[in-house]
Length: 126
Ligand SMILES: [Fe+2]
Picture 1 (cartoon, rainbow, N blue to C red):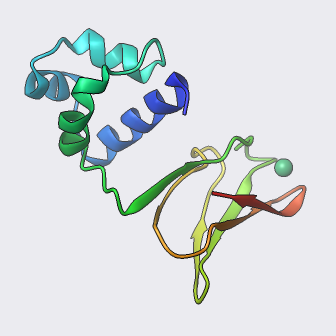
Picture 2 (picture 1 turned 180 degrees about the vertical axis):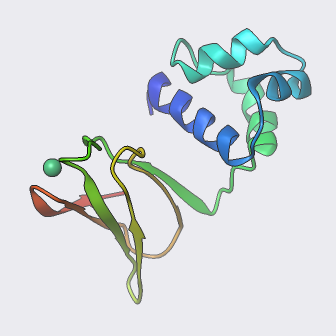
Picture 3 (picture 1 turned 30 degrees about the vertical axis):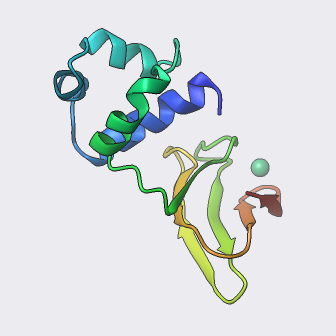
């Protein structure tokens, strides 16, 4: 993951927890500007901060955090994503104008199928 992806993930997890940048910063004893910089992809958090940041954001090591790089406009978007395990399939519906970001519980099997409303189905590997 590059800094932009890390930043997006931080912002998304922070939003899931309904936390402000200030709240994260205060808990970690750093500045709000630092958190803002991470989220904008202008440099990632120092590796020594990751364990604490992961705990605050509730990162679950049993989950995959997947971002699919695809347009999500009203006219052209990913309509659903299916994560194919060896004995089950998990389907997540997506909507235009949201980000194509998903969280899946880790299962055996690493296939992901995504369906675009214009280009149909394709496969990705985790
Ligand atoms: Fe497409």
